[in-house]
Amino acid sequence: MRLPLLQVRDLHIAFGATEVVHGISFNIEHGEKLALVGESGSGKSLTALSLVRLVEGAALSGRCLWTPQDAASLAAVSTDEIQTRDLLKLKARELEAIRGQDIAFVFQEPMTALNPLFTVGDQIAEVLQLKRGMLRDEAWFEVIRLLSDTGISEPQRRAHNYPHQLSGGQRQRVMIAMALACRPRLLVADEPTTALDVSLRGQILDLLDSLQQRYGMSVLLITHDLQAVRRFADRVLIMEKGQVVESGQVSEVLERPQHPYTQRLIDSHAPRDVLAARDDAPVCMQANNLRVTYPVTRGGWRGWLGRGEFVAVHGLDFVLRAGQTLGVMGESGSGKSSLALAALGLLPSEGTLTIDGQAWSGRARQDLALRRKVQVVFQDPFSSLSPRMNVQELVSEGLRLHNPQLDELGCLRRLLITLAAVGLTESEFPGLLQRYPHEFSGGQRQRLAIARALVVDPEVLVLDEPTSALDVAIQKQVLELLQRLQRERGLSYLLITHDVTVVRAMAHQVLVMQGGQVVESGTVDAVLDQPQHAYTRLLVAAAR
Image 1: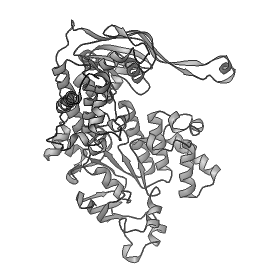
Image 2: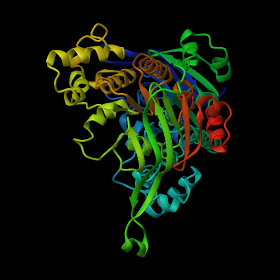
Image 3: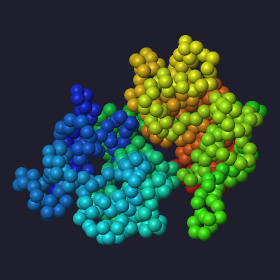
Image 4: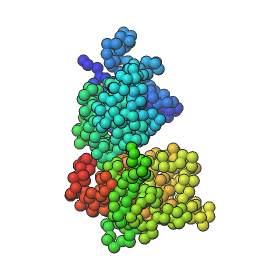
């Protein structure tokens, strides 16, 4: 009988007196694609990191039985342990030989996982030299092959790029190449597609699938994306609050879920609950022939004649009316974020862009009134909220700037009303105003970010990927909150996203952008249900 590659038995993880993973057990078979699914805080990432004891300060108990790779590995163990090795009992030096060599990781955000001071080729070569004992020239030859295997075009040139010079999808491919450098038997992919747009998600999953078959390795996919699970995995484990509540073949669990938590995850898409669009509603924001460019340095002798330009947005037109949502949909590099920055007056633009008939002047004092009317909610609330400021300081900062006439009592009253409007109250969160961002979950931090924008009573919110960093259940809560606020306050939203389901739930009108140009526009029903352009059809199909 062949032993599983990894056997986890009664794994407990605790920090001090608080236990966060409660005696879970599962197997990973040779060549299997296993998905570990759950919301933020369910313990799925802690479980994966604990396999090779990468969780600092955690008390671990139970067993993680690893089947050695080859005859040389078997010779290194005692007779009593000839079948398996318990990863939780290995010495640091023994475990170091397994990390990266037998068990490798691909993390969620490659921009933070990669060193910005070294080229991506140097970082992969370092792994090859340390783990496989290669000489530098030999390592660089292998770097080019790995980059080519992961689908990066011009691998010889890209190997000399720094992380910031690559797109999000390319950086994730570099992370996969680095993980595969030592030909691991188990690849742990921790939310590898969360930060990517919908078509790139599919590309990365297809890449992992083909590499898994080519290398014959097992893959542990950690995710909250059930679409990714359906597309990629053989078997799935559902975790809730540190416990495995359901497991089985993907088709069985997702088609016929038995546990209420699994059923809730599957049904967690926000329903469309927005007021019908009114054609006679006042215009809040309008653009005519909007053009956004970036200066670039030209190569060769042309650089002596002046700088060139990169056109991010080409001649774009749109109208955003009061109480309505304009969804701007497209992949990374389509120009949608440049459009958002221009709408916020943070990026110079040509053509016309007005808010209530007034254009950005580029002068801070003159634009102050417009800054109150147009606020923004960013993708990642943890990086957009200062960790040095408590809730009272964070949310009241804009209020003190735009409403200096308010006294302390008036400011506090507006602050508490706004926090309550987004579902944050003192009764539920004792000491709320003195808490810091790290003391909240991802969904709660996004509510703080929304409160920070709402407190100055804006007319337009620019929502830049407001739910893409959140798990599916929290996404539903945040979208329902935004829908309610729009109905109650008559807010207008400029929604920047790559998520077709978010557009379907929120938008009245849609712009589809590709290469800086609008390739299709119209009502949400017309564009998503009967797409005319091939690119729109590709985006809609990738979301299914």
